[in-house]
Image 1: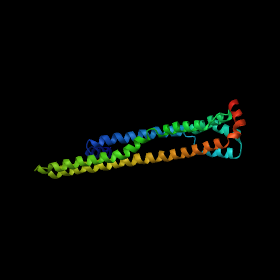
Image 2 (image 1 turned 90 degrees about the horizontal axis):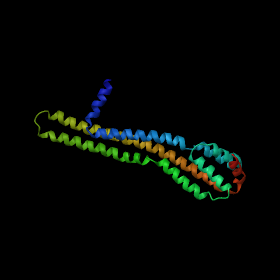
Image 3 (image 1 turned 90 degrees about the vertical axis):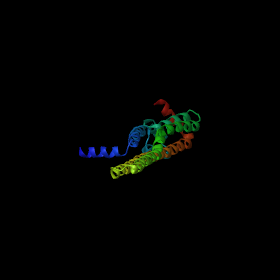
Image 4 (image 1 turned 30 degrees about the vertical axis):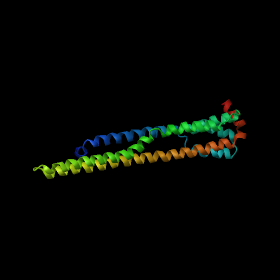
Length: 213
């Protein structure tokens, strides 16, 4: 309990800017949790990409189709539909390009806001620093309690700066995590789509399995 009281007292020393920074930190956490659930649901995973590649390289096209059909995520769904189109004699390259663009745009949703907070949070902390220093310097004309007032102003400056940097570091870490995850998804997409294109002449029988299933 004492730690909570002490932490709240320290938070209040940062001034009004601390509430803005607190809002930023909660927003970063909310974005991180929401993106985590979305990525876990819509990412087909590296395992799918490896299995699909292994089956195609082994020329087991029927099993490759089943693998795409039964795997979760956007990459697997696009691959399964592209194979069906190829098997029906349709062009699949444009389809995969458009659908991958839509899928990646959905993966990137809200990640931009994390990038904004990485830049904005230290600036808000700097604003708190300036506000605290102004408060400190304004007491030079006051004869009584000068030392306490100056110390309080400097404390406000330091707390706001430190909290702003913490929020920025948290946002940067979360942004980097999902950016790397997204890079893996892009790699899986390119690999899987190239295999679909490379096996154009061999998806006919596999396409019949797709239609019958």
